[in-house]
Image 1 (tube, one colour):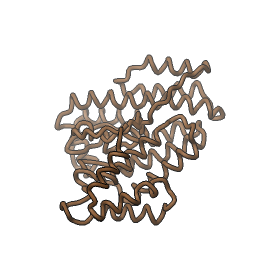
Image 2 (cartoon, rainbow, N blue to C red):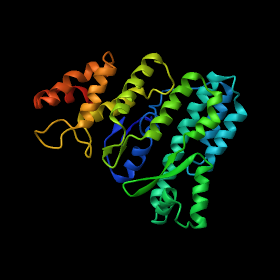
Image 3 (cartoon, rainbow, N blue to C red):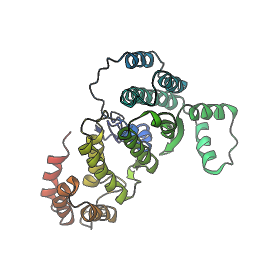
Image 4 (cartoon, one colour):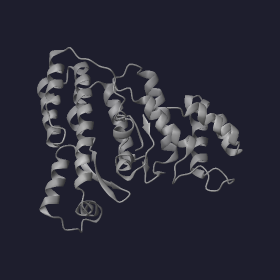
Length: 304
């Protein structure tokens, strides 16, 4: 999966395995497999309500989607919008639980998946497929508990509906946390990678790299330490290309227009960014097909 675990990252350490089951999640959800799956920090809480909430979440079954609604209700019972620092910490705990439930119900979905699930996706697209009550009930349960059905490479999967977080948590959280979550939600909706290729516009990909650079610089102690993993995930794609969005379509041919567009945009709009300074000499090596320099750059900059 295209994850950096970010949701650890998870949005939030990049795993390059592209098996179909894994890519189903990776393609759809940056937060889950990149920014939203933040690398979890080594946190310990002492405030009584936070400890209570942590114990409460620990006791909930991760295999039940309905427990997202239960966790949300308990959050609102314990915390108030005026207590933003506590609320940020409590949301951190919720987000860890949210990711765990997403993984668990996807495991169940993959193990039980039948062709019937495809009709849900077809119905979303053209509204002409007649659905069984079993399928409509299944979909309604997902939707009412912050999840939704999606598909990639001919396989259905369950992803987070981050608008649920907006509706239920933003009013409790600090501006920095909501800024982070808004960016994650935006990236999830725009997409990133699917079926071995990039689905995001090249300019948008560059904007993301620089956005996360700036966010990391401005918020060095932010709870979700996912920015480095997210930057690495996105930057790696413009360094190596992807199977179905390759740097070169022919061995000695020109650099693909996707990457010339991305690099030109980076150097023109963000000339002083860290990414621009890092990638400018590499871009020259790509254009000149300097294989020795390309290899050296990747060895120095793509280490785990």
